[in-house]
Length: 100
View (tube, helix red, strand yellow):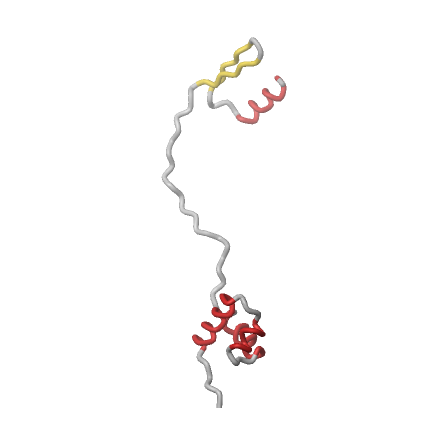
């Protein structure tokens, strides 16, 4: 009568097969296993493993304040334009489009 394998033994066999580079049929033949039993056990045991998420936990880091210059200096041709550093980015983008 064949010896029954524990769940842990089946998990080890499944891992060995994955690392062996052999097909399941070849691996089962070398280890005197039924391919039907191997697929059945792999399906049951591998589906019980917790699924690994592709998401990672993001943790915020301490915010470092960056000092901005008080004025932005834009040069276009012979002209120089001084603007406060708090100038709205959309307005500045529209200005640059108009100047180009």
